[in-house]
Image (cartoon, rainbow, N blue to C red; front, top):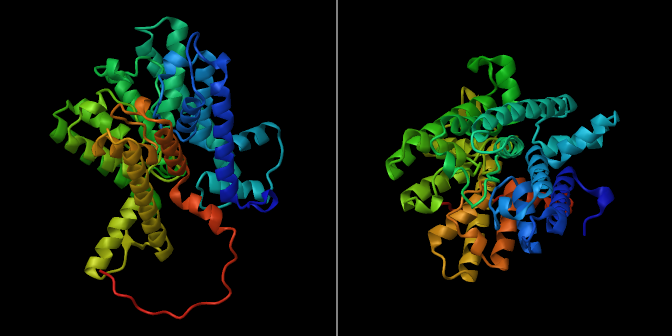
Length: 431
């Protein structure tokens, strides 16, 4: 059992997300958050809250048709908390109360926001909060220009604010109704570019964004930031080209879905209409995801890069390097651990749902599970018709995807004391 007075930072973060989901599900289950005449079961309220806090965007019921303004506001707040992290939102309240940060608070912030150092962690949180507010405000204004053409002023303002929060936090929720996502705005260049811009900016990661802004010279960037930039650009280009080849989309459609598949979950074309080749491309992009310290999910760009470089190093019997720097052994081990655990989570969830839902095809379930594990939100349309058990499986998958399988594994690892001795080594045959 966990003892609260002896919890480690990772355990506090996991517990914090879990409690926010429970509180959110309870609020979304209450009738005063529902549209008149709408019925929302607790499992659907729990699924919606989990999807919002994990910034996924998978929906079991239509958000616009089931939740009123208060309900949508709660969902937007859950998305914001999930995107920024429970610890950073808590830090915001502490800052507003003008209280000082102790070492324990700083450790929580470092763990919750994936910072690598305690140095300047409070200053970084202040920057993140200001940066988020400014970017989301710009996104809201640009989105309003589009939505105001089809909706009354206040409705357009509300939709624009919700969309900006969802896009920046890489959560594919929409409140347009009819489970149509952004399909009606497929031809809107401004909304497509605004949404893609919000997704990409947030997907870089806050620390990376700070470094790019302050140094403004690629050669002066750290190895981590260089990897993030190179991998982000590469995946966007490759994803666009592959979707153009497999689906015959316009360049705008191909680019938008290449961006969105990297954990955002918005779509301007029904995902159910994609070919199997296109769904495979989406699945790979969803699996890799965004970058560390961002609002996105997936195994992360740096993890994928490290694995590729490691395989290259093993094949050529050379050190694992990048940009004239050696990648540490512990980073390589962590990368392969995250990759392996992610594969295990996806395989297990897919198998369980296929057992529970024998009428569904493998590709439908696989895409759904990868989307949940990568906290993306893209779906072939099967989510609303899933059984209670399948929805619970996806809830667990989204929760693990948001926090990372390694963080979840560490919750129990902290309970065991490190051994005070070492076993002798013995070689085993690999491959």
